[in-house]
Length: 120
Image (tube, rainbow, N blue to C red; front, side, top):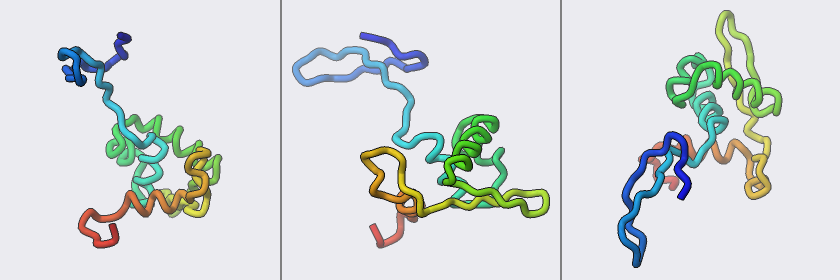
């Protein structure tokens, strides 16, 4: 079995097998790009430093992700005095072939729903 760098071993029970050590990586379903975009979608005037803290990555990585999102036209930056305001182009399609029939706005709206909303 290959051990992943940074993975913490845990014990798992597989049907019909004895307990064995399995590498359980610390991962999430959404990418850093999704997390940054969602954070700016929810609060368009927040500082990238605050986005970095919320997402759990460095401010430099957030700047890189924002630059890539701007280059791909998913995000626009408007200067307001000394601050930036971020606007998501919600009408663009998702990029992966499995999801390309959906728009980024659909995903962001879904992820922004309040758990108490009756819409779900």
